[in-house]
Each structure stands twice: as structure tokens, then as C-alpha cells.
Image (cartoon, rainbow, N blue to C red; front, side, top):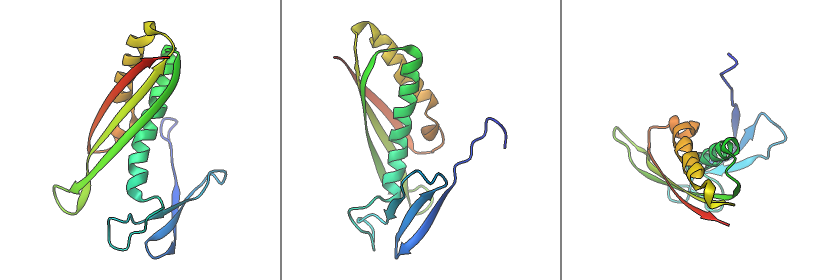
Amino acid sequence: MSETEHKYHVIMDMIADREGNFILDDKDKPVIRVVTPPEFKGGKPGKHSPEDLFVGAVAACKMTTFCAMAEKLDIGLQSLKVDATGYLGQAETRGMAFTKIETHLIIAIDDEENRKSAEKCVDLTKKYCLITNSIKSETTLTFDISVV
């Protein structure tokens, strides 16, 4: 493995029909219970589904990428909220797939003079979010910026 290649390993340990523990190599990270979502046969409400984790990965990557860019450009970031919605539909070939992921950033900065830099951070986030760069689903990114 090269210095630019990183490895992420997880284990899914089935504990019941359609329910398992999502376990990471880093034992300090909590186990996440994962089930089939209630929209599907055998699904169960109240726990995370693979679909939740997929959309969550997009949202988390947008957040961490934006924060990294905001730090580099020193935009006076006060708060950031990422609102993400994934749309699951019929795949082009067979079965179902995510057809679109919409993300919306709600950004608060400390000075109006930093607005253009904050907008640049959004553009850089669109370009460098490694999760959206790794999926074939259509992705959108919109944003609102306020000064607090």
C-alpha cells in the first residue's frame, strides 16, 4: 500500500435476521447496529440502515471537506449544518440504486468580508469531496451563508 493509499476495514457481524453490528478496526469507535430499513420486507424501524449510512457518508464528507477548506482559507466559520437527502429508485440495469443525493450546506461566518471565500470553500467542497467523487449517483450541493 502506497503512502497515498489508505485502507478502511469494517466487519458486519449478523446478530439476527437482517440485523448486524457494523464493527470497525478501531476499537475506540462505537459499534453501529444496522438493519434492513422498514420500507423493505423484513425491515425494522429505529435503527440505522445501509441506506442511512450511505447518505450519512456523503453528508459527513461534505462537512469535513468544507471544514478543511474553511480552515485553509480562514473564513471565520461559526457553524455548519449539512442537510442531505438520498433518493433510492430503480437502477438502470437491475434492482435499486441511489439515483440522486442532494446536499445543502447552512453556513454561518463571522464577517461579510469572508462571503466570497466561503463560496470558494463550497466550490472546493464540490470538487474534493472524496465520497461523492467515488459514487455514480447524481449529486447536488446548494448552500446558504449567513453572517453572525
